[in-house]
Image (cartoon, rainbow, N blue to C red; front, side, top):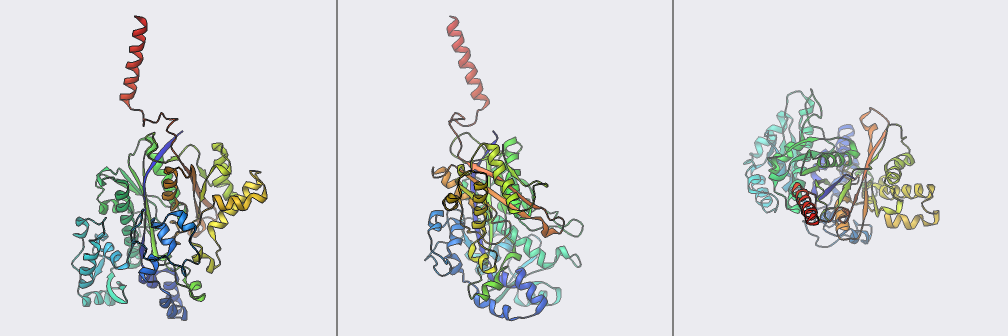
Length: 513
């Protein structure tokens, strides 16, 4: 059976309400189509402060500031019953304030596209240098900053897009080309922000796993953004761009795209390369998506609640060869879930393909999986918009399918849902909620002996590209390494084989005497 170890994981949030106010698809589209409407006038009154976002229970769950069990027991509505004095840094990562994130974008900009006002730049440089994962070499990449008049001229005369902090002009994103729309400020800003979020996730991953950047062999990036120009839209390489800033000088990399199913497919692709021996230390990473900020804010404003979609989510996972010990939980590669072309797009068909079929192939029952982690959206974001409680809907469909397959009787459904379902704690960043946020908690629980197996499920909506109406998805199981099955002594090396042969020969020689 092919398995790959999960050595590390990180999850970070970048608080970006002012960026979302201008460039999130919902408010940006509203302003472009209808002008300064009542909704746009009201939205700023519903923004969360950094402290409010930091103390929001799902955000703390995302970065590992609280345990998953603590999150499960936290009272709702979370936006009314916030935690108190929550940490910026959690077990998995951090929640970075917007001013420092703008500075990180400046660090990640290698084409002089991000201009920051000089006083703002100096102040945020000092703040960002206190972050434990930001190196002096990275801080040295920050540019000195520009005069405010220069930035205003760039915005007025050259169509640069303004960047604000605290309601004041803090900088701008410049255009990368005269007429290529793929290199206009909006696209470049989205790409640099996604890159910066990915860099932050990789830095925390290296810190969490104790791995030196030079040891990283390959990086796969799987966000929803596309980098390129008019000759090859989305042909660019976020992975190597992230590896460069994070100091992984011995790594190469490539991008994998698959809408919301992208991360699951990327983890599988990376794990297969490691299992084959083609790569050694593999990082799978994704940054956030500016367009998804405040996507459901119209409904949040209508219901007089905070506009909760104010954070860019990112993650990174480190995959290594399975050493045959209990040090690292493993991903099983022998039986993977996939949504085939002919599987059908109904919820039942998708659930069958991604959950039931691989369970059957592995000889497991529905109850053999401790937790099913599919679309982990925060329900307080989706419910006001009429999208329902997405994680709850997923586990209900799984339970219904289990009853249909006679795994248990209908009266046991509620118990199954409570024991095997997951509560969502991920922002609506498209690719981010689909399973991957639970990898960290799954591995922690498996290492502690509280769980044995978890299924990670990624789903995608391919109709968004106007190419096909097919559904999409992939799934895999993370489980405890069976050290007894593998001898409990790690992977067998050539020296091990040599020693065994010599022992056998010595024993045979002794018997011949």
